Length: 475
Image 1 (cartoon, one colour):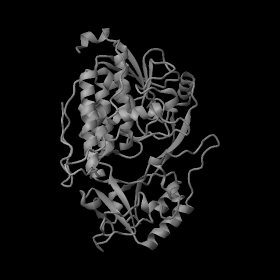
Image 2: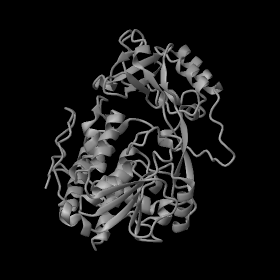
Image 3: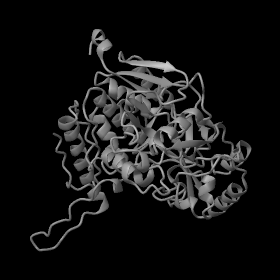
Image 4: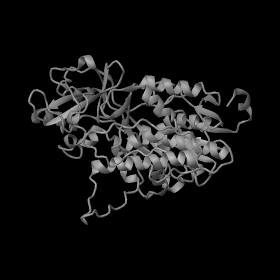
C-alpha cells in the first residue's frame, strides 16, 4: 500500500506491544489496515520489564524446540509460512541452542521494535490505557496488565480475572563458570550448545537441602500463588520430593560426563543468552528465592561455586481470562465480537503461543475492519488446535496452555497390510506425519480461505532415524 492511500484505510486499535501485540499490529497492517498501537512502557513500567523495547523477553530466551517432531516446531513453521513478524525476528536473532529456537534477547527486541515503528500503517501511542476503547480492538496487554485496564476487561467480559505466578531464571557470567568441572554437550549427542554441571549424589543432596531451607518471595495478602506447570519455580518443584528435580529439569539422561563416561547423578544445564556467549541462564531454574539465598543455592551447583550472577531470578504475577467462558476460537470476545484477546491474557503460556494468537487476532481484526468474517485455522494445525482448546476447555480450574501434540486430532487408524497385520506408528514416526499434515492444512487454509500470501518454509532437519512416513506436500 502506498503512503497516499493509508489515510482511507480502516483503523483498528491494539493494546500492548509485547509479542502478541506487536505480532497483531504487524499482521493487521500487512492487510492494509491502519493500526493505533498503545504501549504504556516506558511511561509506566512493570515489575518485570527493564526497557521500553517491544517484545521484550522477561523469562527464558527460547521460543521452544524446532523441527518436525516438536509441537512448537509446527507452530513456528505455520507462522513462517505467513511471514509472522516475531518468528522472522527470532530467526534473524538466533543463538546456538541445540534443537531450540533461542535468541539474543536485546537484538530480537530491537528487530521487532524497528519493524513496528517503521511500518507506515502503524501509529505507536505511548502511555497507559485504562479502559477498553470503542471499535475494533485487540487486547494484548500481557501477563502484567495494569490494574485499571484489567478491571475494565473484567467488566467487558463479565468474567472474573484470574492470576498465576511466573518466574525467571538466574543468568551467569560465563567467565565465572569452572569449565574444569562443567562441560559442553547436548543430550544424546545433539549439538554441544549447553553447559552441563554434574552432581554426585552427596552434592545433589546438599544442594537439595539448601534449596529446601532457602527463603522464597513472600506474597502480599492480595496475591494468590497459582504456579503454571510449564514455568514452575525450582523451589516449588523441590517441594514435591527429593527426586523430583533430578527427574525434571536436572535430569542427567543422555549426558555422558567426559571424566567418567557415565551419566551423573543429576545435572544443572546452562543455555546461552547473548550472541557473544558471555551470559548463560540456568535451564529450568526459574525462581522466586530471595537474592541472598538464591546466590547461596546457585553456588552449591558444581562448577558454579564462584558464579557471578548478573541477573537474579524474579517472580511476577500473570493475569489471564478464563478463556472458555469468554472467547470464541476466532479470539473474539463473546460479549463484544469487535474485541479480540491475544497472548497470555487469552489463556496461553509461552512466547510463541503469544505471538501466534497475536497473529490470528490481528488478522481477524483486520478482516472484520474490511467487512470480512473472522476465521479459525484448521483443527489439524497447531494454531487451530490451540485456539479451539481455549474456546472449548473445561472452564473449571482453567490453566494457561502451551502447544502440544494432544491439541491436534489423532491420525486415522492404520489399515491392515497385505498380511492382514496392522502396524502402528511409534511416537518418533507419528510426529513428522502430524507435522506435515498440520503445516499443509494451515498453508492451504491461509492461502485459499484467508487469502494470504503463503511462503513455503524451509524443510526442517530430519534425523537419520526418521523414516519416510511424512513427505512434504506443500501446496
